[in-house]
Image (cartoon, rainbow over all chains, first blue to last red; front, side, top):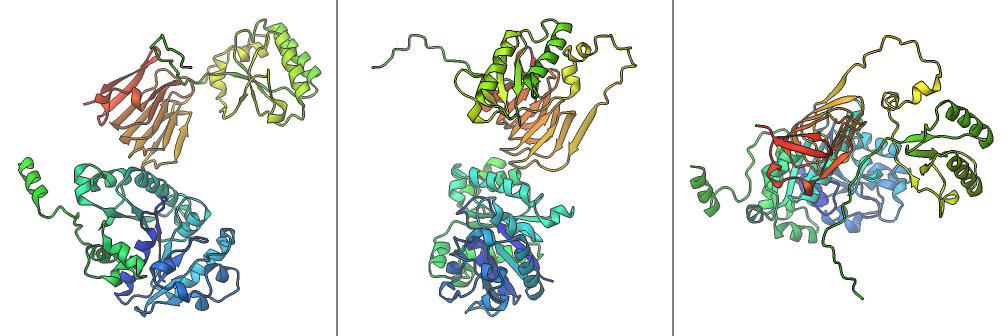
Length: 271
Length: 242
């Protein structure tokens, strides 16, 4: 039985879709069978980031409505044998996403894949709550700024109350993925620091993705950053996050805190 | 034309909650008014100077009927300060404003007012007074943005933080073993001795017994510290806890 992960945030534009694609490609490179599922009906993006927009024939809604089989809607990645995409519908109404249909599709996917990664739409409406409903664990994507942190806090509250796990009285495993982190700006006080975000959200951290042009470039050529440029800083951070998701214990490095002038100043102050 | 402001003092606007008596009439109004008169006859001036809200939820009446009822009540010295549950179509100019969001209050809180004794004109044989059992709840998780903890029965203890956009409403005191970033309202049913304690104060709003304090009104020196807050007269006092 595979694991179902929801990638969620509450706020839009923080990097859910980018992170879904990057984590999916990172896990698939470990030779595990991965499917990334786009839940953003009407505003699908995951197909673009995965570079599969021209190969979409059937989508999640078609499968839910019984117009296509799951195997017909799944798109295999051209670069990675074990990576699949289940796209969202761009034209259908989001009300077609029914609880029963989602449950059926997720159950089927869980049987076939090691990892089912659900890319949640922004907001706290039915699309977002359905994307998290069947998850075993959640990746909460947060930018180091106050509005994103508060929205993530709200989503954590929903993960602890509206999911099947929560309703069964079990504890949903939640992980924080801090994206678009800029060490210099955090140091100047323009951004929240890592420890501030962790203090507010109080859930374990699985990775800090540095703000980088590599991410934007990868999205624009239709490739997850962990495939397009595996040696880049954000890709390395995603690879580490994927290993932590798989259960490995690795120390986390905060970007920009290893060396440099700041380290020296702080070392002296602390002494 | 610019109007010159000669007085530099600012207007003071405060939020406050009051306990109002809610009258829920039933149809036909004539019969109901007879019963009201009967009650009033046994307790002269019962409604005098008391805030009264008229609850017309689910009553199939039109504007004229409502207006007549209000006039009838005014004739009995019952002044209506607001109308609850009225459809917009029956409200209008010259009517008391619509109210919503009212919360029921335990009978105990109303019992402080003479209502109960007045219903039984004979003095009740004094039954051994049941001591209200003190209640409290403990929440062992952080309270997340958008969540509310409402516990009118007594004290609330939170082991964890209260996020920005979350709220705690307690009939008694509030204890937070974590950072208070949201709202805390203690003594919500009219308990002036309720207090708020928190390990780190970053609150958006604090209230004790209906007296409010917004983040901007708090002394900046208290932010980020362990603080307790209590009520003295009409003002919220605060002190650092070491």
